[in-house]
View 1: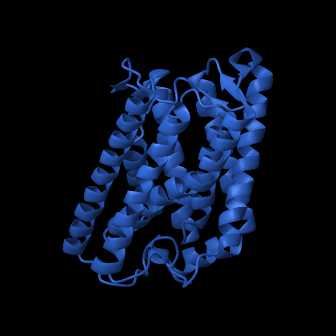
View 2: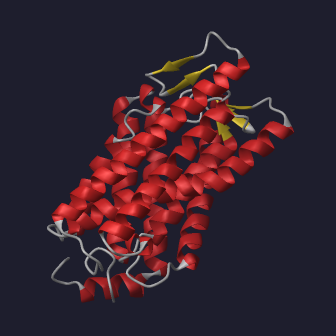
Amino acid sequence: MKHYLFDVPGQNSWKRNLSSLAVIGAFVFIGGLFYAFAAIFTVMIDGKDSSYFDLEKGSFIGLDPTFDLLYLLLNYVFWLLGIWIAIRFIHKRTMTSLITAEKKINWNTVFWGYGIYMLLTAAFQAADYLISPKNYAFNETSPSSFILLFFIVLFLVPIQTTVEELFFRGFLLQWFAKKIRNPIALALIMAVIFGSLHFANPEMGRSAVWVGLSYLFMGFMLSFIAVKMGTSELSVGAHMANNMFLFWLFADEKSVGGTLPAPFKILDSDPISAFIWEVCVMIIFYFLSYRKYKKRMIAEETTHTAAF
């Protein structure tokens, strides 16, 4: 079977990789400018003189959290455009090749990963509520506000998470896989890169160690599963489910989403417990994935014995 990391089509020299990185970086910068100007424009229309950008939280204070999330997610459209230009014109291949070595993405695999991860996350979140109900409360919000949030998350979060998968477990992981073949080593490298770029998130204020470990562990497991599967389809689904679940259901002042008009709000969170739940979810997700796709994983190991 073909492996999306080791059977990469197109032209992929280190010079082309560096050129692509520069192009993608430029579009990420443009996306950041869009976010800033859109937020400033909205604040000016609202006439809030007390609004400002909080460097620690990474968001505009005084800006409606729903619009803040909207502009943040729209930023990824620019990132996506940069990736498309780089892959299409510099590497002479399709975006699909960043996810799978096949001609088409297997959406059944993506949605299976999405559904299983969503169920596991919901189950362990419910368990956390039963253990620490004082950490949760109903959030007072209007139906119209939640409906707006629902559709923003429905249409834009899949773009956000898929863009991150295309870049981290696609472009970057394929680049590293040209020299490194061990799946654990590849997963560790991506865990450090993927995790460290989330260290600026407000959640780190609860515990730099335990929240940081949660990011690192999730980055490791999603990368390890992608390498073992020979495709990042499961990772795309799981990542999507994780972010959509959190944005849809919870308002949390110490999170990227902030005080969103979600049905529930998190009053407090034990970072150690959160890390344990994350480990449980990812481990169970891996074993369920292995059970369902055992033949494929074994076939990948057999085909790429030299690589593994």
